[in-house]
Amino acid sequence: MNLLYNEDQRLLADSAGEFLAARSPVSRQRALRDEAQAGGFDPQLWKDAVALGWSAIPFPENLGGLDFGCMGLGPIFESIGCNLSATPLLSSVVLSGSLLHLQGNAQQQDRWLSATISGERRLALALDEQPRHNPSRVALQAVANGDGYSLSGEKYFVIDGVGADAYLVAARTGMAGISLFLLPADAPGLSVIPLPLIDSRNHARLQLDQVQVGADALLGAAGSAMPALNVALDRGRVCLAAEMLGMSEKLFDMTLDYLKTRVQFDVAIGSFQALQHRAAQLYVDLALARSAVMAGLAALDDSSLSEVERQRLASLAKWKAGQTAIKVVNEAVQMHGGIGVTDELDVGLFLKRIRVAQACLGDADYHCERYGALELAHA
Image 1 (tube, one colour):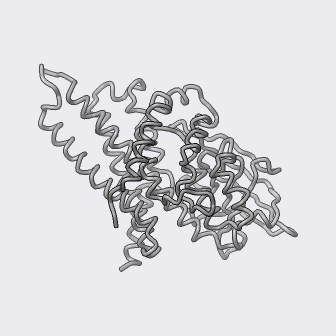
Image 2 (spheres, one colour):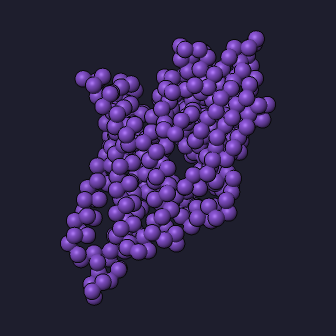
Image 3 (cartoon, rainbow, N blue to C red):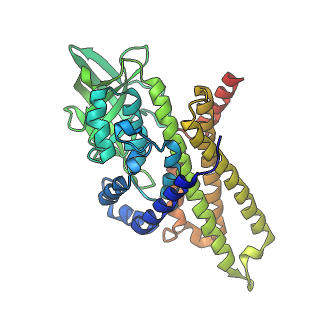
């Protein structure tokens, strides 16, 4: 398993870093927050990112992709984290696109996946129904009704749900398993309600009141969606881990710069041994987090690994990156002193995004329990 980016991936990292630093720096995220845009991101930025090929990275060439795999997404999400850039790459491409690729038929892929890769359409996954992430706890019912289904229930924390063109909705068609339905945003009976969170990104709550869909809205066979959901969610979790790694490394650099320039008692506070020890520990934690994230990315592309091993490494990456990000941002706030708690300092924006990203698609407790259960299964 290779835990380093290859030359093409390093070039992608340089390109993404330069693009986002110029077009979507942290100051742009602050402006989006203050403007309270419903979409939570700059549509022109997303259009230009699609033109750079970001939306095609994980998909095979026969579907219009670049076949760079999930490892190719790693440097993109690190750059997104470093700049706090808001894009629908996670929701529309990594989660929804993966499900269309894994579970959709040729007609669904031709209509929706191609449009997702080209940026013409934006999709969102509607899965969670409770405050804490648990993909197996789906209660929304899809009742067979003639040649189609009737869907009723609610979904929470739909990433980039406001303004999406369609939704992939997880529902139960019986007690046997979970099914996925593709619902257009204008489906009668579907209500999309903005759900503000502390990171000022685009989240939504969906209400479905007897939404009628045809049988062609079902992705794959009824009750068969869980394996594809597990793969797509693991991809999303590792991409979020890469984003949190990017945020953590940026915060670490910002904090080191402050320690070197802030003078107290006529010396730079970075000369204080207690702060040096704390910074050194953060450096070690970041190195461990990077190893976990790289292992997770590599596992997603390694067909020789078992499903259990892939899931273990994905949960390890999400857990370690999340725990490290929380530790780094807390230390950043403390080491910046009084200004660390002000809105004017960018550290606060990182803190809010880290809090949401750490909880998204399973928090530390969820992935610690999942890893332990998978470890026992693997033994």
